[in-house]
Length: 324
Image (spheres, rainbow, N blue to C red):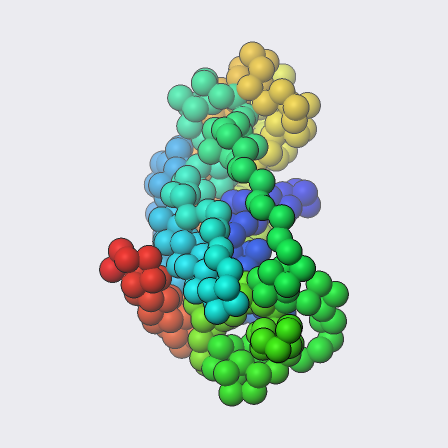
């Protein structure tokens, strides 16, 4: 099963900081809309033998941006922010847009023997795994900050447009700064609406993302995954490691601050060996896939629209960045 603290790792595993940061500018709800309300466990087909989870595909991948697509969308949103800031005599140089590492490598915990031998429980693709720190952003003047971010003390109860179409029709939430009209939420939010919610029928990008999260959590509580997790835990116990958390075993084993120590490497190698012996990744991924397929079947019409809008968004992003 998935321990309660595992849910806190979901944004890193299943989505990206960039998109979530953008979402926070919209005032949109990130409720569990579209989540699976069926208490029954879905049927699964044959379970293949799988160990390394890196590169695994899931059915909902067709409806969300991942990897290089996220990088493209980030660059496109930065371009839109810069275009907006030019209207007020400023320029914007955004961060991000670099290729994203494979976010499946640790979806079911450490699962690659070579990586475990080299890094232990340390995730080499994690932002905290090393590398250069980003240069500090230049300090903004008061008006420049207003143009970029909107009102500092914005009242979340105030109505704001939920699409660029609505913003252009109503001007709702806009403010005046030295005689210049600034959109609600500033250029950041305008760029988000232009890219992710250009029209009133835009599907909330968090709807398919919530399904991704829901399917992961529900699959972790599935009886078949619980069974294989217990088998993996027993295997670990045979080697002297007490843990029932295949995703974050390092926390149970006391390696939070020394994830690549010699002791952590030894434990991580045993972790992978136990996953191979029990086929934990194969069972979980097959079950995970079944939950996603059920969600797609139940939400086919909405997801078809979300997929179409994603494709349109990616075409616009390619045009904005000159890669189309």
